[in-house]
Image (cartoon, rainbow, N blue to C red; front, side, top):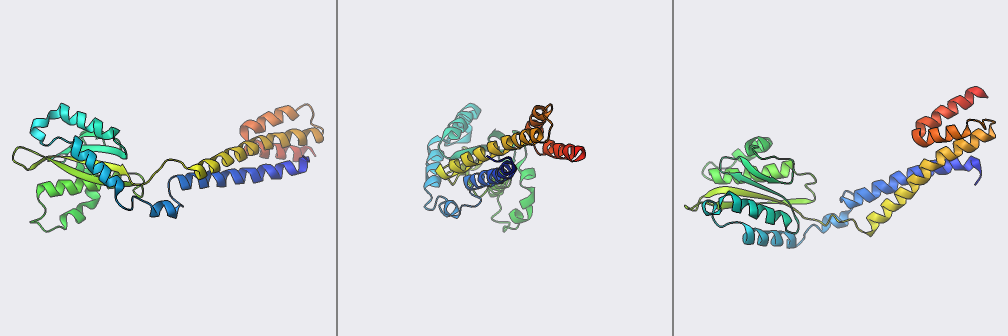
Length: 246
């Protein structure tokens, strides 16, 4: 390959690598994929599966369940298909169990959902019972703290006490779309990796050949290694030195 074309090909390979990797990652997380957006659980299949898991695993009563039983239920839910996060909250709004997400045990859902305060309090006072308020706050916190809300969906379920009133709440974040990389995603990423490798090796090779052609035989290998490590910064340094020596 002629030396004069190597630098241009390296630049083209670098640009192609960036575009391929960007396309692969974008499609993988659904940014530029209308087909994936349109296919977000259109008939509620995943929601139904998550609701069946909740009905089968959650204890029927908070008092009789106990902390150990509730912990076991959370572990089972976390292992269920589609479920990403599980949060457990008491009636006062304190989050006691966290599996996934940025929240931590001891956080107050009132602080996590403070942004939605006006929306929550806009309900008719007769409808805004303590149970309803806490359910809304937990849902708002899950949605606000959740990354990629275009991919996740949320469910909140209450666990009643002996009197039938809610004593604990379980918040679920589940995947509404398939985030597993497809063939197109993988192909773009492979092309990007190959292009990036050609770009990264093309620059030092060009510097090595150019320095030898310019009479810098003694330092050509050192310049090549320097550009291999420093990349564009090394190339600019080499071009500056070569220009001064001409």
